[in-house]
Length: 468
Image (cartoon, rainbow, N blue to C red; front, side):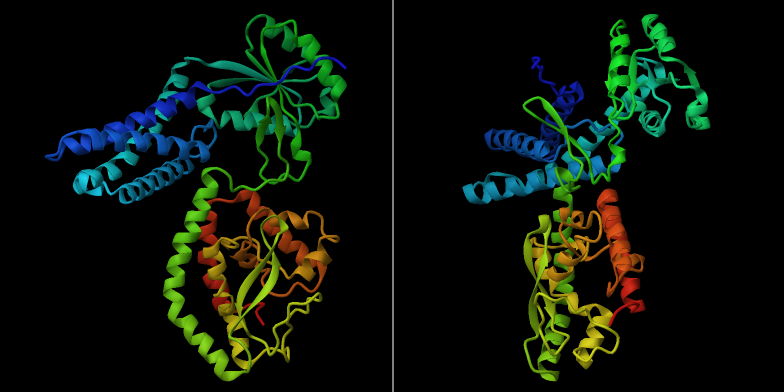
């Protein structure tokens, strides 16, 4: 077996710049805030600044704030900065209380520091992006790239690079050895096919092309190997772009194991700063909703106890994150508290539903106790709705990708519910549509999508459609 060299992940210089710039902004914010007061920059403030740099740096690493942000929106980067700094402030306050040093600091100076620093960090990151765009516009550091393979993957790659001007890449065109009649039509905004692989090699040798991306299908190993052998006689940088899009990707991302690169095909979107943002959103918004609904929930519980025998609340088994069993809270709406091996879904005019329970089910108020699940961390405000365990076992063998919905926490509401797939799923076709929306939610997740779903849920609940 031939000796295989490890493949290393290059650490970008930009990541080091972000670390230095963030630390500088923290110090600058502290100095500016103190100079606007009557206090002096003595040891307690120096220690606080050093602790802030350490804490923010650690949280930044956990939240992937020093990754390559090419192609990532400024909004997501800004949210990450605010969350990391917010957690840093909370940690500093806790340390101050525990060590009993809060009296050593001017409250006005600290408040200004806490407020000014994130603005400085954001300004630094925005300035970095502006400088990158400026350098590209002036032509500094610009490289020419070509795509080997006239196919859908090549088109998507070219579009993505063109939409990322900070990469400072200028598109030369497509190259392929196949007859033109066998190639799909190239989109008008991407130019045209320049020539064959030999034409590409000639241009690379002449120094007119700096980077080459190969987008052949993974099954075309012999073609890839042949192109690589021929390109070995040039000085161009060569990249292979695997066509993972033939799979049903669920938040694919790269990582490495001791230098060996691996790519996830099925993964959760909630890692790094996105995971922190999602959890803070659940705690903040969920906590506010819980406070606002505390009195109505107490009233509902009293009416349930008064109008029918049995407990006001009960718990049911569901599958949660990674398919682990959880127990969710609900208001009792039936004469029974079913949680058995058979999932008998409620139907219009179901005799098991109490008169008050019918009102709760139409308005989805029976789901309010799941706010306790959200606060405890077993559920989220928004996500795929949890199904009865019997339903999971039934449909996981009938619907491809069914269990992938459990790569995220179940939600009190979800994308499927606001798109008309609320209520019973008595036939596989209805469940199939719900799963399609659940997986779409995981692929396209953002905080704005969560907010949109929560707002739309109000309209869905008021319409009382498919609720019985």
